[in-house]
Image (cartoon, rainbow, N blue to C red; front, side):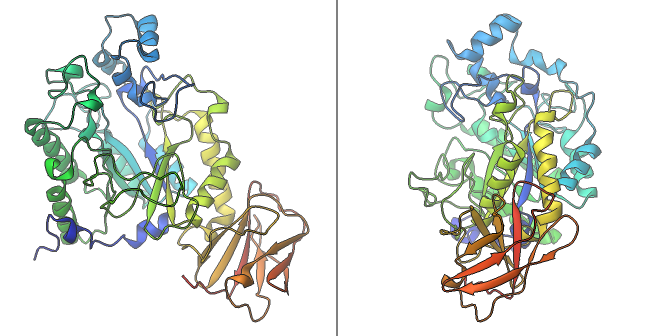
Length: 471
């Protein structure tokens, strides 16, 4: 029996799987031919259209007359070097998929999303539909297959994102940037959606990717045409139904929705500003002010770019504290963080990215019970505490996570949200053993008496047992 039909009314009934709600942290990996030049201007607007800070957009901007990337390319490599000439230089000679999988598992990630094909039209698997793929050129390895196997050995979920809906470079075709539907002299983003020949080609590759690797997610990037033009609903329905046959709990993001650019966060930061379809919403490099009823996932790099940008310095990267605070804020508001790493062309992860990633994992070793498997409480923040606080809830337990050490006493306005008949049993999570702490009720606040500051840094978790979740 077919469970899902290719209509939004049918597809919108699909539930968000519990593993995805519980996981909280995923690892995004942008790795491709663009990792060879590994450059973007560091003063550009993140995600900007004129001169993007995203190094993975190198093959787009290098062909834009007057762009900073074109100037850099010609000065560094010369006018005769094409983007496809970088393929032979991408050897991935130091890549160890097991080492990546072990690192991501140690950090606490629940799932890994590798860019299966980015906007440069170069699949990272052995594709039947184009010779321009990583198994036949460049690394000469099935990067998707090798990483999927390594990641799943650690019990993590795996997916390969698919960005071909908005390819700006397509080797093997004629036309601007090798794309059959883009004409010279006009920005690609202004030229509408792809034609039927390209749509068939694009979906054949995507279905091949699904068929070969049974991904736990479909992570579409921004489509260049409406979903009915791309036959997206048919593909999603088939994916859901095949997953049911396999007994696999899967999810699909919102970027195959009818809205051509997908939902974004509006000016008031109150939620998506357009109707969306999919199991979760995907803002980028940003968060919400309030708890969202719909599941969401923000994606961002540890640096300004998703792909590796050798021009970025330490100031361009998140510190460990910034990463932890952002992650906790996202989780408290019903979000997941899909945290991107951009490896070098040789397959190694730069230290400026590895350091905060490891720091997050060390923090989660102490505080992970307040994160994994948690759900939003009735509010995400405490408005009256002297230190920034975020709340999470799990198994009849409330967690208050402070973004700095409060000192001897912390006042929390928990009783204004739920009935607290007696001061709850409470403990401070530390790196050795939980420390019982004293809590007294004072009018509409709980007064928490704290011991000496524990050895770990950046954020601190207080556990309150027996506090209900009205949500």
